[in-house]
Image (cartoon, rainbow over all chains, first blue to last red):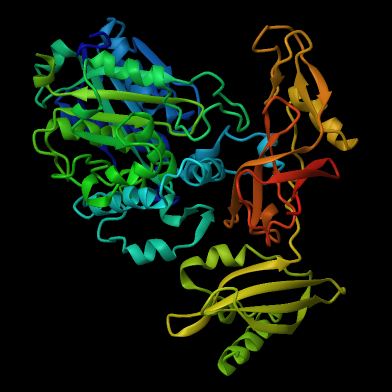
Length: 389
Length: 234
């Protein structure tokens, strides 16, 4: 075993309420502070004790400004993961874990906040697509992911039903999560099938839609984690990066229908925890769009490639508590709400804490996947105390 | 056979559009996609007249296609093709576009310095990609040095605009006002035959009628500083 071996853990996790985009009067900084204070309360930690800050996706709120607003005693460490979009979501957690494991900080807040009030419309596409895209009417990530998803379906033979199953599971889980934007709005299969096309093959319900809101988790040392009130979600293994011929290639990636989790990276993730895909109890997979999330699960070896994908990706198999691969158990970006995937971190942790709105009984290994079909991808394997022995 | 009530609805719809009666127009749209439909087609300036050119069944069962010509005070005109279905107790528009289809054009691409030779080549009707004279690597997207042998400043070599469709998408959502009037449009990612498998994106001309398949051969056509693609006749 290599990797973190449980040297760091998440001890508190919280989201703010999630609002339809453009409807929160609060700035992204105010929302971020609200989320961090809630995460501190969840952990039973004095917010003044937070001494590190980590974010991603070109977050506008610098760690130093967030720390100043909280009036923390000292800022020992802060960082921002490079790369737009959700690829950095796990990487921001991993960076925080590295900081506490190496003694550079003791209590790091990992956060992401979005509000159109200050960030403007379409902050998700900030810094994404240059003239080699825009000149050809390629304006947003949805179209990039549509190109790749179309090839995944048409050439690799992944059935479109695999995408729908993932969406259906997300909406199903949202029905028992009162905080989810899709709470009380179940998705009828006929409505999905008849929904408007955004960019073929992606329909409306295949696409995540921005919300105003924020989320945060607190990462600390294993030693301190054991003295706090929540069961720690230990970081067992962590990866981030970009494979050969992958980064910013204007659609020239070598493995075009991959989500970006290349074999060496996946191998490192499993080896770091000394486990394999069959040991995972629950998955939170970043779904900017349904197709890339399916590609992530295939990359990780959780789902077979090609036509066999639906052997695993059928709705009932993806549902907590009894499915073999319960995923996006709070509704995910699609149905709980989209704040660049920070809600997926919160939910990955809640599963280990035993307080998910759709708890997988005895969940001990919880996988978080960020990115997909983006220049940067990242992953974190969380484990309960039982996984450390 | 065209239902009589549909003919009346289409006629009424055309007049409502021409008169700018927004409430009546929106009521004719499928209610779950009003925003998408409103921003899909571009009317003529100072629109004041509509003429229904025809209504025909299809292209799929239960659907009807109407062509309506809208005219502006200054003589501008635009033809909208709308597809109608009976849903929620009424005939409603499920999609609409300008015909003939024309490709979208981003007003000012503001290219990166690294890409300048590519864009300048397109202005002259030449497709140029980076190619390393030392090790032969074709490089795309452009890089400051060859990623294989690290020779500085790879050269720009002309490539035949010819290849096969590697991936495609037909975009329906008006992500920006500049695409209004061109929706839906097809973008293809083309694997170039003469550039070591490097791929280049572009709009597919006549994409409205195209049955696009990965692997199909395409040819490039220069269009005022942009490269467009066309499916090779079978």
